[in-house]
Amino acid sequence: MAEYSHTLCPTMRSIMLANRLHLLLPFALPAAADASTALHDIQSPALDRLIARATLVERVIGEDFQRTLPHERWVARQFGALPDSAAAADEAPLAPYMLRADGGDPGSATWACVQPVHVRIAHDHLVLIDPASLELSDADAAALLAVARPLIEELGVRIEAPQPARWYLSGDGFGTLAGASPLRASGRNIEIWLPHEAHSGERSRAWMKLQNEVQMAWFEHPVNEAREARGLPAVNSIWFHAQGTAQTVRSPFARVLSDAAATRGLAMTAGAGTAEPPVSFAAWSALAGGANGTGGAQSGTPSNGAANAASANRTLIELDPFSSPYIEQDWARWNDAFAALQTDWFEPALAALQSGQLAELGLTLCGDTGSVTLTVTRGDLRKFWRRRVLASLLIE
Image (tube, rainbow, N blue to C red):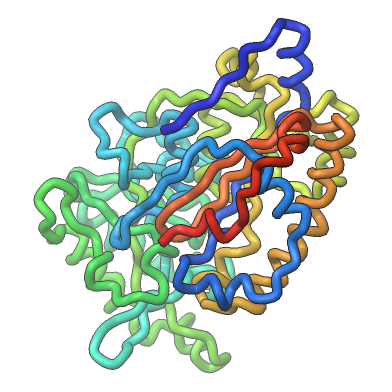
């Protein structure tokens, strides 16, 4: 991973460390093939100015069939969540941290996240739909879980379900099973995304048996009958992903504001403060102003690693208005989300850099295969010779 550093006197360094904000934006970069549609008529002068003057920290060009998402890999690397033996290019073993964020204790066991999903029949294959589009209530998820739990435990698999629609399974029978992130596989033929043994590429008999038994138990279940009567898709399968074991992690941020269970769980494990993301830069700035850039209400106490000179007063905010429209290829809605970010975040962040209220802004813009990370300071804004444009960041 590319790195950057500053050589400054102690006084200047203390100034530069104040109010350093990093925005993580999943699915903010359309694929180059979609760019003409996605970026048509977008007006983003503030983001354009930030991108034009920024320093490029890293550009990660992924591959078409990677099973994890760029923003998942980014947070795993930032927090040091990959074991030394990991094939880091395509691993994001985030389930144990998700479990912690959801209220469980992963301990030293190996965990996988399992979610109820809908798989629809296409012409000659099966397609996974975005789990968020299911509109699955906690009550319905709990009813389906009650049926599935004895089938899971009968196989000698441990299950924790602090959230009804997000389960965590631990069992020796799953070995080194690798599953694809649901949003990576959504909208696609599921054949190549089904779980397989990471080292051999073979399908797991233990998982296939469990999946088939749960599917049969849910067929014509009252919950699904009621959903279909309301015009909602049946919950007809389960999806396995993010298997891994919790590592000793560190936080490069003092505070992490995110709705994503994996990101929150990593921050909690590292001892960083956590909270929900604010609705705008102004809301974050108002909260931060009362606590020297702390970013508002939080849980957890920053550890020594999270509060050292490299991370003090550094906040990560993960904003995710793009995932659903990106997966559904709804570029009008994606454009609306982009316009809202321009008004609520990019314009005020640029103004804060110009006034010195913000010392540094980091941007990690992700697509579905790759990502780009940039940083911009007040001094960078004066580098008029830099001319980078948004389109130059797109991943082929």
